[in-house]
Each structure stands twice: as structure tokens, then as C-alpha cells.
Length: 286
Image (cartoon, rainbow, N blue to C red; front, side, top):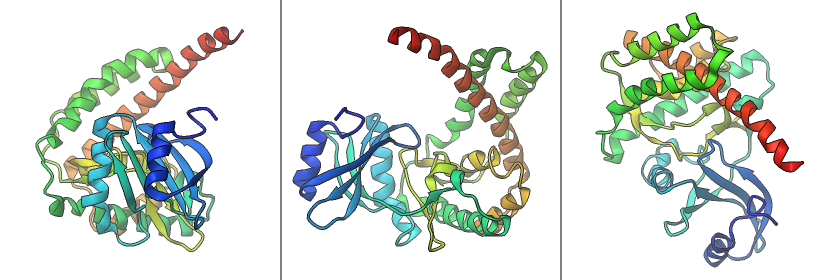
């Protein structure tokens, strides 16, 4: 097996010393792509688990901290359980959860509204868990200026995918983002919620992948959904914030508007970068 198909040998050895003999079911890139993850089954009792290797020490620290101090607030079955960690390998072992990511759900809108209501309720629990974590807040104010600073680089990469007027509009929104008022803070998930929220056949919703979790403006957790399912189906946004327990204030609405535009530019930049890389990859294989 290649490294992508199975955990690195030292990680697998540690996992088996910790849990007993394991068999790898499949290899997959973690979502968001801040590391790698493999589904495994413990041969002794058939328990399905996941072995994760973080991209860097910061991602390992964030996910470990989240599981120990914030994830329990979500309640049983609403998130994977942390079973073991190895700082030496930047590795974690967590339980797996059934379900389909929101990005792949094909449900009637009435059912989707229920899913998004529960998603709002679940995110509110996570955001409020910050009050119990005791985690430092000093980095929270830097998130929005950092994202604004990245806008010019993304526009440069996106190139002619955006017109001159569109580029000016994105840069104007980036500048506005630097000066929004005081925003509500929370312990955010920080990753793409569309792929991290799982809806199961028994109508349960769960949240996974906490490698980006941190104390930050809560509005950052709404951007992925605003750029995805909420755009064509605004009723899903209404259902979400009903479950969340409050609507957005004026400054949060402004921040979300700016962040949505910056995220769109970022995605265009990623698409252009992938296109530019593809021919070079193909030429190496000739």
C-alpha cells in the first residue's frame, strides 16, 4: 500500500499498540485538507475508527484541544469521540460516525430546512462552549484582517476570471472588512461545514473534523453555507438561524457579505491554480 492508502508505518504501529490489531478500510484526504485520515476497523470487535495525521503541530493542537474541551458540549453522538493522541506522530484516533455530508444530500426542501435548523442549534452549542474552555482570545481579532490581506493575492492568482470592475469590488469589500464593528466571538469549527456536517438515516446530525477549531468571530462559521446551499435556497438560512437562536447583527451581516465575496475570489484562485498545475503534471507523466 502507498502512504495515502494506509497510515505511515510508525503511526499504524502506534495505533495498533493503543487499540489492538487494525485493518485499513480505505484511505482518504481529511476535510478540510489539513492532514490525512484513514478509516480502520479493529479486528477484535469490528469497531470502526479513524486514524488522522495532522498537517502540522498547530492543527494537531487545535483538534486535540477541541475534542477535550469543546466537543463534549455537543452531546453524545453529535461528534466523534477522541480515543487517543500522539504528539510525536501528530496523530489522533477518533470514532467514526454514520451519515452523508450536507454537500451530498438530496432531500426535499422541507427536510433540508430541518437539517439546517439542527445545524444552527449544533453550531450554537459549539460557539457557546468557548465560555467553558478557558482558551485564549488574543488571536481572535486577527482573523478578519488576515483574510482581507489575502484578497489581493487571490485576485492575482484568479487573473482574468474576474473583470477589472469585479476585482475592484472585491478589494473594496476587503477594505470594508478591516473596519467592521465589534463582532460576537465564539469557539468556531473553522472548516467547511458543508462537508463536516453529517446527516444520518435516523435523522441525526453530527459534526466532524475540528483541525481548524479556534476562538474567533462566529460569523466565520457561516461563510461556507452562505456560499453554498443558502444562495439558491434562502429558506435554509432562515431555518439555520432559527436553530442558532439569534439573527445576525448589522456588522455581522456586513462581515458575512464581505467574507462571501472574498471566499468566491479564493475559490476562483484555487481553480485557476489547479488548471495551471494540470498541464505540468501531465507532461511529467509522458
